[in-house]
Image (cartoon, rainbow, N blue to C red; front, side, top):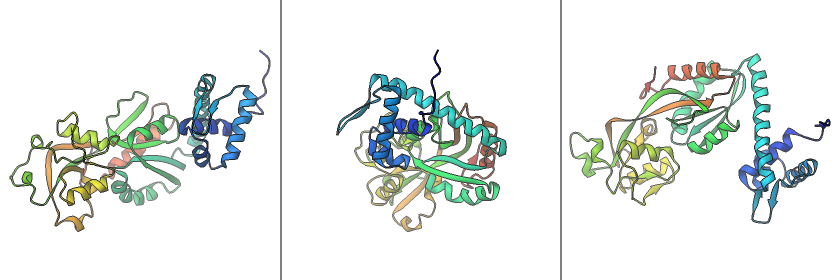
Length: 306
């Protein structure tokens, strides 16, 4: 086979192609990569010329890979994973938890868990520079698989053999009801009594929605009253629209709503929070130590998993 020089092939150009494929939009891809749209478009065209392949079909409203482009983009993703693994292996020689660590946190956990954790992390890992991302589970796991995140804090189980999940702690669910709601008039409230028409849920895509349905023993819920965020769910309860299940940590610092809601413990209702990483990541042993540190500093109202 004839020698093919690689001088014209840039990892940055490959990263541009993958960004365009992820977002199907040159403008948003340029923003993610921190370059101008014109610069990104020009580099993608140069790569297409170098490879003698049209990677993307373009129109004003439509960007999609061509059949040949789709095959090349899959290889581009493999190249980026290999390049980042090279960096991770080199980083591990000087300390696997030195430098930048990209952590994704599910939106129903991050605002309530991370603030108390940060001071302890800074003390334990002074050389660590955190990059935190908050989103729903599915998009963060996508980023984790494609090496755009190093770790994800999420509710388990995840059902993926390619990812390693280390359980950290059990976070209880509490029932939150408008003041004087009918379900709060009994001494003992069971999970079997939940699931009525005024059960409030988050929108589809939030893992907490699925967890609440599972805890209540429901496969789906017909109510159209859905909250876009955990904060909005809380305010809907305070407004008297219905009741819901709220993770324990999210009930902190809610004194301003104390006269509007009743909070009830729910026996047997909880979720498992875990630390997740790619099974192929060479920093696995260091991540296990990191998970052990997190278990040693579990919030007082949660239960560590030994």
